[in-house]
Image 1: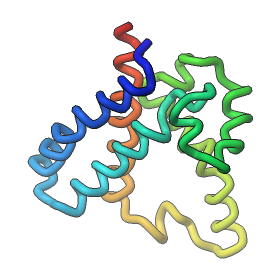
Image 2 (image 1 turned 45 degrees about the horizontal axis):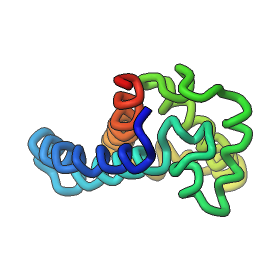
Image 3 (image 1 turned 90 degrees about the vertical axis):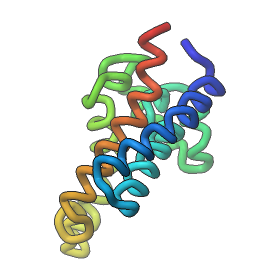
Length: 142
């Protein structure tokens, strides 16, 4: 299994490919930026290794305690943390359920429809999954 430093190197080596590909597909600086930032966030802070005392986990600093129940729920490198699509979806649901319920209930704001466009949401989800894959694929290969 690659070290945290190796995962970070992979993230930054793949970043120019992500940026160039996104720009060629979207022909939009704005969407390329959204996808690239989502990719970086996912690869560095929101990947499958949040289930252990890892670099991504420790990058949350004082907020890392929110990941303790997640660590207790899932075994390291399980399909629920390192799985294609499912790992990212579980982390999104895990981290997003409280803010979603809070804003929906107390402020009558549906974040998914009132704050962000569907197009932007799809681009963010793609970036999050690409970042997760840039972490999980090297793990699978070793």
